[in-house]
Length: 442
Figure (tube, rainbow, N blue to C red):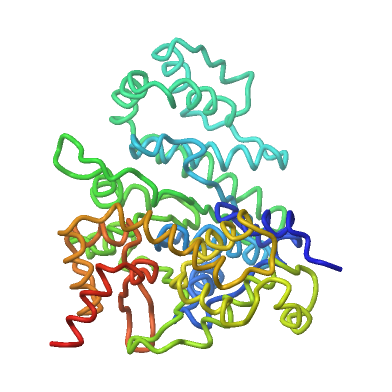
């Protein structure tokens, strides 16, 4: 049966997050942990599994597009198999990521947990929120009759009223901020505490809340001089960690490289450092190709082209997708092990022509990506990139955080620890190649 090009394109959508619990999506999933240098999902899961009755708070981060959400959905599925009740949600559903406060995050968690519990016919109405909602309704001029609606519906009305209105958000925060500790106590005692009791009556081992996409919080500077992530996850991180359940938060990668990374570890992580999901290595520190990483990326391409058949059968059909194995390997190497970049390059190939793709087809796509990315880099940033490549390390200041956030450089892990390299697409530029030649000659 020939390759279904439409389904292949759909499967390669770089913005698609695989839901590991869905059998259809699981056939596309490749476990990169053996080559990434760590097994973060196993570490997160093991902590919760060993301490089912305790409260834990774990932090997770990584480059945009390296597969964090897919890995978190795998964590959700595996914890559910172990008997935990898991609430996973994307924080951007409830929050305006350019303007977030601690009470917004607490209310988003309360909303998502209560909504999922209500769908399971576990309905809780924290008494503290009865008066709170009445007063909030008056402030927002949106009456909320708490006795006649589910708890999650009350929060939804508040969120809908304020999400697109900075003025109303500001009014609400002025009211909520002095009550943060009361809100936290109510969520813990009247929502999460009771929920866990009810879940245990249903033989669940505990409650886990996974808050995804908080790494996308805008890094704008606040009037205090702090950035929004610093305020949320450093100044107020201790409050966010105090919820009475198992928590997994995604946080901005820049915090790991800031001067206050140790403060994040102590205040928010309870002494544990955030776990960083690195790229899939396609080269080693010395520049040589890393076959094990390339092979897993090949498998990812085959799984999307020919789902539902064995790897041996998929590999045998290589020539239906590429004119040669060298062309496939070129794709894997130039992606730098960045999963979303690889899928984006593959999507561009499919958009231009039907497979099998020639080396010429692929090179045209690579040139387009190279030129688009290089246009965004100024001379100062090029000098910083050269320094990262030369030293294979990235400093903690804001300039180097920008290199990571803009995906000009990538992070990898090996037995010696973390190291950094240039995004291979940028290594295709004349600017980089001239610098590299000068380095070799000197």
